[in-house]
Length: 312
Length: 314
Image (cartoon, rainbow over all chains, first blue to last red; front, side, top):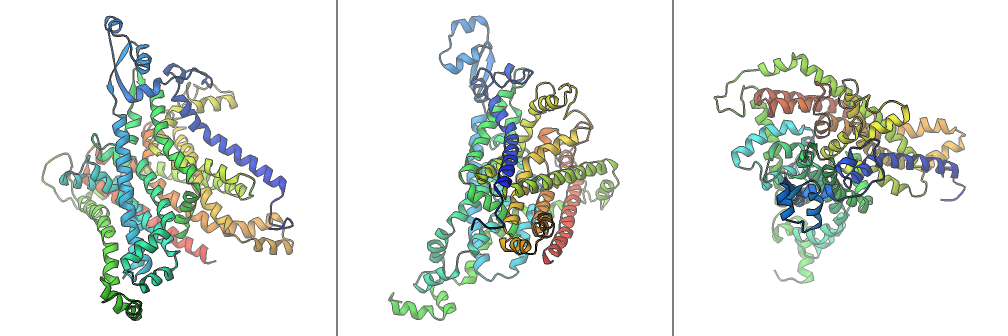
């Protein structure tokens, strides 16, 4: 673009708009930064007034997050000196660590269900998207609309019969049940996004491959899949983020074995009310991977959001 | 068939026949590819929906093992004449209207500013987008901490700028403020979404339109209202549609933040539905409620899409 272009904003405009956007970004980051800070505070610092920006950082919140603790008598405490740094932190409150908390398990559940459902959504979604993109399917538009409209249902509305169905099938509170459910929710978006990405790949590539003697299936996985790799990756991130963040189904359909982290984090209770540093620590550990991925894959993600929306 | 270039070329020419020889027909492949998706959606979306419709005409309670009785349309009549449910609808409407209002206002402004292409704009865009990637339940939970009177950061900052006592107002505990507390958090979280869609709209406007307007000596303000706004409008309307559908279904964020209280001032329809279905276990009644909500969203969305298509055609 030439420097004489009338559409290029002036330096002053750029400077003013830049400043406004940065101010907004900083304000919007404040709650997140505050939660991350709170994770490193002692319970007393976390609820002090005025709010403390400068404080003695401690890992107490993180220790409390990963452990369960019990109060002990002075005699017992004197007889068993603390052996580890985390034991020492707990001793300040005349307590000992009784065992690991459920947070690790819940986090692992989030990982298993998140990746499991993402994998399944991508496999099924890519196949369906390819078929919709390349073959004449009767009522294709209606089917696509049907696939999309399933997202309009409030999760609670779907949860009632699914609750009953899963109870019958023995799928309640199982990893498999949650994986299937999240796949069903994600697949509409996955098909829609992936169809867009596959539409962009010229048909000539596959046709050339077919002429070279590839079967349709070989052409699909040797020619189309590598071409669609970035599209598949960004769709996968969307599915993963949804499954990672989902709460309504998780809280209604799981209670123990397959419970994910979102329903668990708010229930972390400390001595005398909510243990805010531990809650903040849990939130931090849970939110950081998503933030990390967002920043790392921003180009694909941002494109995916607008692309997915604008195509409809 | 021996695999030589000649046979390959020969078999490739009448493509339909050739593909059949090589194995499955395209049609079979199409169904094999689409089949599992359709099956999954039928099993986990459509079958449950039909089941819900059936249940909505009964007095079934999922926590009891009694005979299911058909009650006709009684559940529907009771819901539509229940004044408490109309209150929940009003709370939902308030939430919908104001979240969309603020998100459109702030989102469009931000997109407009970012589109001025200042240095580092994509980095800041990414930072602004972060809240919408997070888990709504966890976000609701930590905003509850920020909203605490006396100890919360939000109250402290408001007090700092207004000179009020930070413990003199309770965002989550007061009937007047609670509906706004959920609007604030939702706006904080989802403004970036509206912003991204608007940004896509702004970037789709070709430069030459502005250049032509400049040649015609149209003022910047006139250019804004005759070029920028009409060309971004379809995008903006799409963003509103998505936010509308999502916020009509809103559950996780608000349930963690206020749990529907105080009283039922922030009890959105989804939260109310959850109470009926999974706390009072009035399964039949809740099913009818679910159907009413679904029909409402679907109906409103269809009307809106029609309007949207008209705007696009212009």
